[in-house]
Amino acid sequence: MSRARYASGSSSPAQRASQFAVTSLEHLCMLDIYSDPQTQRHTSIICTLGPASNSIEILRQLIEKGMNIARMNFSHGSHEYHKETIANVREVAVEQNKSIAIALDTKGPEIRTGLLKGGGSAEVELMRGEKIKLTSDPAVKESGTNKEIYVDYVKLPETVGTGGTIFIDDGLISLKVVETGSNFVICEIMNGGKLGSRKGVNLPRANVQLPAVSEQDTKDLLLGVEQKVDIVFASFIRKASDVLDVKGVLGEKGKDILIISKIENHEGMKNFDEILEASDGIMVARGDLGIEIPAEKVFVAQKMMVGRCNRAGKPVICATQMLESMVNNPRPTRAEGSDVANAVLDGVDCIMLSGETAKGKYPVLAVSMMDRISREAESAMFHRRVYEEMRQDATLENSMARAIAVAAVSAAFEQEAGAIICLSMTGTTARLLSAFRPRACIITVTRSTLVSRQIHLWRGCLSLYYPEPPLEDFQLDVEKRLKWGMERGKERGYLKPGAVVIAVTGCHFGPASTNTIRILNSD
Image 1 (cartoon, rainbow, N blue to C red):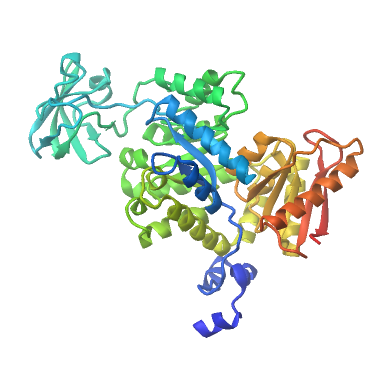
Image 2: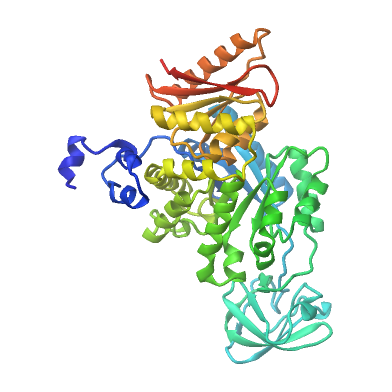
């Protein structure tokens, strides 16, 4: 295909031609690099906020470029710092009339080394082939050397036996256990390097005996309840009971906060199905996971988790190093661009930026790049095939709501609808529609401010908070909300004038009332 064809406008927009393919191979063959992507992104972008991005000015730009969920990383920063950042996000969200969700990411149960002699900035050189002692003896807590360092996990000797592997500092340093004692292990240094203070320790394939919620996590979660955060990203979840422990801390006041379990160790992988059932969603946290399991297995884990979440109709987030080079550079590597695109093609609901927006030099450019890659990948998806596979899968409950969602998405495909408009009180109907991955966006009109923020976790759901009180005449209220939703949708670019719209509504006020599908015109 020539550039002349692109210039003449003969390429179909948003890879439209490829959607009429019969097979997956035919679909791939019909993809066109000169086709303009869709204008509206379906995959939500999560931005980690930090020194590079927590100011009002930068937050304005991040939201304008597409940030949907703001992540507060409680591994760093004081409570006062996070409260100020949350207040800034809410101020800008109100200013721009946008629903932005706030997520609290817990520190979680971690194992770390102690301080070295010389203080926090000191380093020691660990040489391959030499021996080093890891101990929980408090006497060494602040005086580590290249021969002996403190580790804050008293059960280390009984957790890793002789021959076991220990990783330190994101896997940069690897040790092999050659001897165990009452409160120490002696290791041979397999991969050496410079070691600083308070570095993370990973014990691959070991069942670590740490509480799911630490004392600090409890304080952080209670602050989240006080600050009315929308989502908790629960770190290092290893089993379903860990999720219940988090819910227990959130209590009655935090019962509406959604819990996304971060899978980042071998035990979490083994217990994935029970964790998924207990959680509101899953984060594929590839950082620690890539240390706990072989690097070449990470993509297998990612695809499995995305698939099972899609089948269960629960949101799944892909995180860690997605555009890592943009911490220091204005453009990502080609591999990073492909990584983001392939995560979208796999079926993730959200993609996350970490250091790129928290501490990077180009936080706004990183969000803009992620938006562009996502729209290209979404345009290239074989949506109809995904819909057919989801429709035939019996995992989702066979209810009236499911039948309505299937019919609405089918109608959207047949009519090449510009959008599906869903009037939702709890978000249930919008979430079901999202599970069947329509090519059209799902404009979710809701009177709940909480639903308008949390719905960003589900792919394709574009939220519109409707502030007007209900009318006594239910049908009149429905028509008013539909008209308002179409007008706001056109204003925000969700919907083009004259586009076909699939309207999904109920028969009375309240949840579990959705039973009607109509085909409308946006004019």
